Structure formats: structure tokens, C-alpha cells
Amino acid sequence: MKIVKHPDRTELLKAVADRTPTVLSHLKSCAACRELFELLGAYPVAGELALTSAPSAWIDRAVELARTSAPSEVVRRLLARLSFDSWSLPAAVGVRSLATETERRLRFDTELLTFDLRAEKQSQGWDFIAQVAEKTSQASHIELRAGRTVIPVDGRGFFQWSSKRPTARLTLRVDDMLIELPEVTWKTKNRT
Image 1: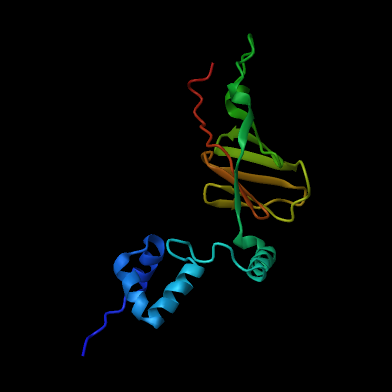
Image 2 (image 1 turned 180 degrees about the horizontal axis):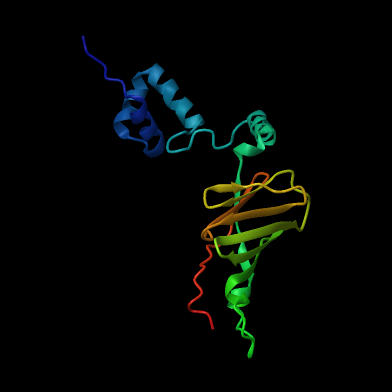
């Protein structure tokens, strides 16, 4: 009795692509392998990604899932730009005041909002007050982080806090968006 070696699926896929002569000769005598060969030829899957064109019902379901996802699951990141820094302005000629060293105003902008920050040096540290001005719709939730500390917003829309040293890293979370503010240095010895 002669043992017949049937090609495996990988060999059949290769034969569909490049017409391997040994497999083709086997197909003449084997109806089962010939049927599988014809099926693989009719529906080419060799080297293709699975479901390159998914059924429309699956696509509709994926779109629906994206719409119903909780906003906390999807977070967009934005980087704000520093648009104003009072310490970058040259000191006025003839002004003999330490106010320029102990007070600082910063403004950060994105296409959605403006973040204003005022810092004042006190004997025990720094006092800060900040406000977010939105350029488009009203956000339902705004959170400010100074380093690892979450700063609560007061009833008038201001963030107020004090610290021994100013933080270089500030971030805002506005609904489903995380806005990173550029890192700020607080050294004054190089100012003109």
C-alpha cells in the first residue's frame, strides 16, 4: 500500500501563489486537496491581514462603541505655548524696584483656552493666582495640577495656592483633555 503525503495548508497557499509543480501534480490525483486548492485560490488569504475590509455591521458597531465610551477613557493631549512672561521684558530704565523680581505674570495659550498665572514672592514663599479663559465652549470640569498637588478652583473660577518654592511643572485637565504647560524656570539672577 502506497502512503500518500498530502500538502499542508502552508504548502497549498504557496502553490496558489507560485504554482509549485510538485503540489500541482498531487492535485491531479487528489480531489480533497484540489478542492481546498481551488477554495484558497478563490479567496486569497496568503500574506493578507485578517479582515482588511470588515463587514459593515462590524464597522457600525465599532463606531457606536467609540461614541458611547466614557470621556475619562479617551484623553487628548495638548501642549500650550508660553505667549507672555513678564520676566522676559527688560526692566524699565530708571526704575529702582524689586517688584520686577518678586512678581511675575505668565500667559499660556492653546487654540481652546488661555491660562493666566500671577505669582508674588512673600517672605515665607510664593502666592499664586490663576484663571482659565476658554475661547470656545464652556468646560464642565477643569483641574489644575502644580507638580503633584491638585489645586481646587474657587467659586469665581480662580485657582489660588501658596508654596515655599514655585513649581516648574503645571498641567490642566479640561474635561477629556490634558493640557501640558511648558516648564517654567524661576531663577532671577540672569535677568537684565
